[in-house]
Image: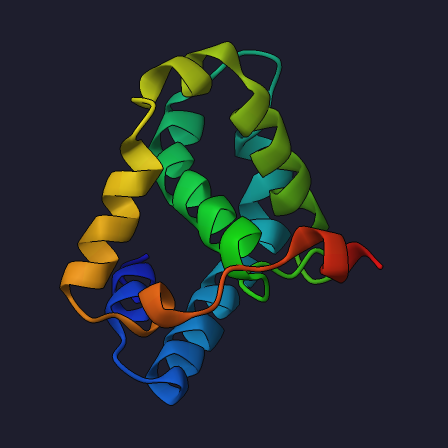
Length: 126
């Protein structure tokens, strides 16, 4: 999923969108071919552990500014991500300041993502 790294380090909106589009194409394959057979079981699996850091950061970016994940396009991945993010094992794996450190990392690299305005969730829900 190297497109994630390209996406988060993109300097411009067009570079960000191109990398996001490529990443969504790879997630299409995960959704279509892997999700039902290999992921999101009742027990935390190696695959869950492998994808959890990516999904944590995608969720952070999506919650912060919207427009990163596509629930209609990837309903299984979104549902899986919600289950993973609610898992005690995943919750306990993150330090309280992990996402602040991630944002600091993006800002230090002058990433387009870091410049995206935080989403006003109250306005977005209206």
